[in-house]
Image (cartoon, rainbow, N blue to C red; front, side, top):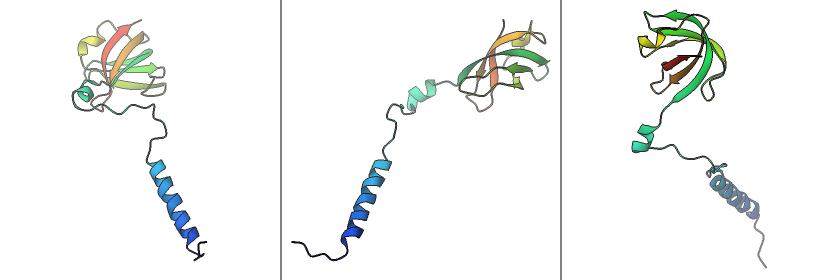
Length: 118
């Protein structure tokens, strides 16, 4: 028979905390994949598809203001101006045109890299 010293609750709590901290360090959802690194990470892009209505054109910047639907994975629906990576993308586009567009967010600045009238 073990002699009770009064330390048992302290030992049990320490053991429970050690187990809990070990469990907490494990990811709760193992279905998520790690972020690729090296050449796989470099190949990963940040391209998003959007649909909206042209509200203004700024060929000098060049830029385009679009009242767009939700851009899944990037932002909620709103009206905003985007820079355009190639001024030629604005050719043939006018205010009130409905457009499909591709936004590149790789550099931290959202830039339209493709634009097509619907």
